[in-house]
Length: 143
Image (cartoon, rainbow, N blue to C red):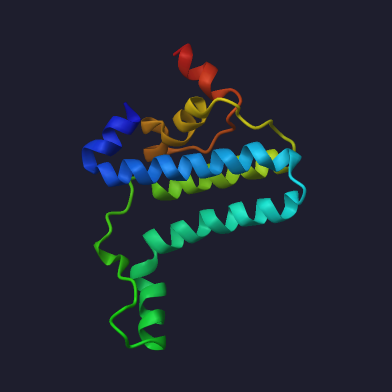
């Protein structure tokens, strides 16, 4: 239902959220066994924050800065992009997931559909709060 809600706004938004969830899922799976876990963790955090900055804060931070640096019309214009609903929430949810795995407070979710539900669960991504993933699928199944 959550993905259906996102798709009702825009199919491109759904594809974006699916790609975002897949990226965080794969980083989370790889983090405990990575050769350089600190570098992978930092890359995951940077990717999460970069997408938030580009989508949510581009119009009044990055855009004007790029306008000062370059006067060419080839500069990317993100102002026409529709921001995914709950982008701040699912970004913080993704960062929290990676932090919990790095700190060994929880294990990576092995089921991508459970992880996707964790990221996109409609009542949560519109209102919060950020949760751990381990009790989440079982809590939804019994409610």
